[in-house]
Image (cartoon, rainbow, N blue to C red; front, side, top):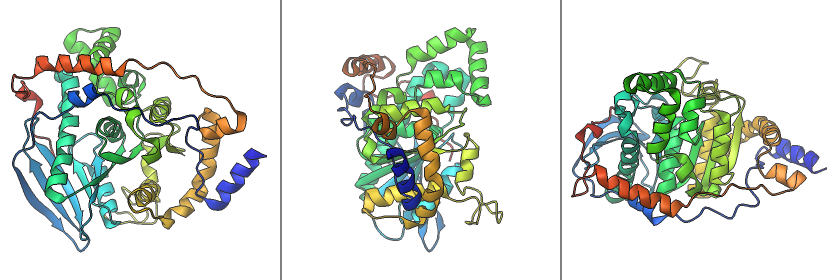
Amino acid sequence: MRLHFLFIAALLSGCFRVSGDSWYEGPPPRPAAMEEYYKPTSVYGNFRTEIVQDTEEYTLKHITIESYAGPIVVDYFEGREKSDHLVLVFPVLGGKNFIEKHIAKYLVESGFDAAIVNRSNEFKDPKMFDQLEEIFRLNVIRDRLALDFFEAEFGKKRFGTFGISRGAINVALTAGIDKRLQYNVLVLGGTDLVHLFRDSNQPRIEKYIQSVRDNKGYSEDEFFTALRQQLKTDPKNTAQYLDPENTLLILGIFDRTVPFSYGLKLRDQIGRPDTIFLLADHYVGLLYTQTVSIVPPSKDKRGLFPFPYIEEEALQFYDRSFNDSWNWSVLPYRILQEPVNLIAEAAAEVGSAFEWLFGGKREEATPPDAAKYWLEAVHHVDDIQGADGTVASNSLNPAPKS
């Protein structure tokens, strides 16, 4: 009877959600030592601004901020109406940020200021393998300095995030560490980077692993052991601090690039937030966005197909979170999508629907001592910083490509 009720409610309303964990008691407090590990040791410095585009709806500003952790390059989409909120859009892999600019433009045209905090590409260089953890740590620090910048220079007080793929992993990191990032959308993301690297079918990851092995003379086991020993900046250590009530997670059921199972692990770590399951792999998932309009063909204008489903769900999430309002344009997509969500919840044996229908409480693994873990990390970082707290190696701070 309950199962029948769930399907009828979903099909009629188009807005029913069964995600969430009825046993979840909320995120734990962030360890003080974790805050110390990712704390900027100096404020940001001078900055310069270039107006790239000026339209009736927004101004696109290219901003370069100097900092001890390296240049922070931001593309800021500023709407015409002044607001105190901002959505940070985290890049996929660096470079031209084609997908991210589409999302940021969609957001600002819908009333939400957005900023892309660009990433440099040194993490992709196999020769930088031994510095991988420091590269990831500095990325988080630059994100936090960007938040400081927007608070001080533009009066921003409320922050959200949006990330796809690697961008979603970055959201799980920075939002897990910095409580100012309150409203978070993660698309096609995952956790446990060491095992994710091992199980991903992404050719670039496989090529990276092989290049490091050739350079270091590592066996496969030795590569993953070395990666595990150095990598602390991993969603498995930070995602638990996100608030599931303020999180939207979108996963691809057939994803093998960021394998679906690692998306489910991320979901459990966050506390089973509202989750959408797409009938897609990592790349077909983009057909749930209007990054490129196929009918009619266009890279710059909205068309008829594909539908901007991910964009509209994100807008609904931000409308609810920032404005306590409803984005009614998402309703038709919800009607089509909801049966898939219900089936995925039941098939994967995840979500409160499964528990509500059949009962029982999951047994959770005992987490490591987080305070001790991050305290050891703080002691370790002293070895790679100068006496004044600045980063010792300038090779970790090249200017990110915009």
